[in-house]
Image (tube, rainbow, N blue to C red):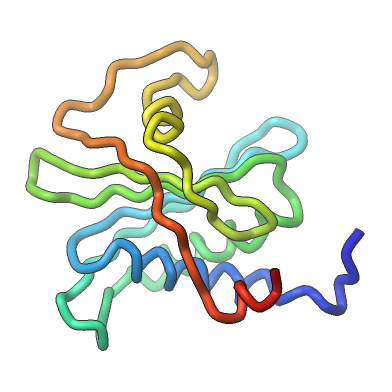
Length: 154
């Protein structure tokens, strides 16, 4: 078991991950969802939408309650959940979007491959049965996320 006095604060790590996600996603309209499964098998999720501008100074205007709930759940994934993932949907047009995914390991999102993102979105959560892909949706791999203090703690 790691020395908890030397670990970063989970909410700080989650906030850094949220910022890193916004940096990777760039300008545009995005929906971010954190989903987690407890040790007892129940699920929790939190979703927020952001609108990113073209300049680096003011990347997004997230819904304050939405991003707080997203970061709160992401922070708890390293403590109270068996499995967790982050998925983003970037709206290209009204009828097309790109979905990307990350597996959460020790509170930090790590990129999923495109096939894993597709499988996660095209499977029924309860039964595991396949479901058809959404029309106009491109399923892509997540990108590597970086944050100075997270990298230093590795």
